[in-house]
Image (cartoon, rainbow, N blue to C red; front, side, top):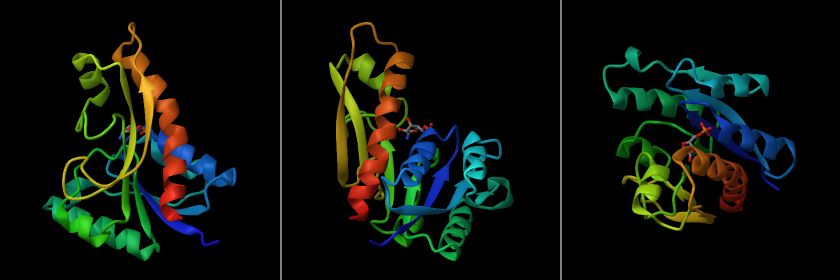
Amino acid sequence: MVTVSLGVLVSGRGSNLQAIIDAINGGKLNAAIRIVISNKKDAYALERAKKAGIKTIFIDPKDFLSWQDYEQQMVSQLKANGVELVILAGFMRILTPYFVNAYKDRILNIHPALLPSFPGLHAQQQALEYGVKVTGITVHVVDEGMDTGRIILQRVVDVLSNDTVKSLSERMLRIEHQVYPEAIALYCK
Ligand code: GRF
C-alpha cells in the first residue's frame, strides 16, 4: 500500500497532530508526516513534532509583506518536502484561494461541530448557546469558503445538560483524536 506524504499546519497545542503521529506509529494510518509548519513560534505542536523526530518550521508572518507571500512560502516548503496531502490541525488562519488551488482537494480540516451547523470560531460555545442536544465533529476537504468543503466523516457527540464550553470541548477533543486519523486514512484510500 502507498504511504501518503502529509504536511501538517499548526498554530497551537497540537493534540490532533499528536493523535495523527500516534496513529501512524501504531500502524493505524499508512502515512508519513514530512513537515510540520507553524505560524506561531511558541506552538506546543512544534515540540510534539520534534519529539517524534519530524521536521518542523516556524514561518514568521512578520517576514512577509502580505498573507499571499506567506502562503507562497508555505506552498514552496510543502512541495519541497514532497507533501501530497495538507492537514490543518488547529491552524488559526483562513487560507486564500491561492493556497486552496495549489493543493486543490488535498487539504483537510477538522471542525468541532456537525457542519454546516456552527462554522467558524467557538463552535462549542455556539452549540451550547443554541441549545442543541447533539453536536459533533466534522472532517472535511478545504475549499475557498469558511468550513464549507465536502464532508469526509462526521461523528455525533451528545451535549449534556450540565455541559460548559470546557467540559464539552474536552469530551469532543477526545473524539477528534479518534476521528481525524480515521478520516485521513479513509480519504487516502
Ligand atoms: C481542535 O478543536 C480542532 O477541532 C480545531 O482546533 C482545535 C485544535 O486543537 N480546528 P489542537 O491544536 O489539535 O489540540
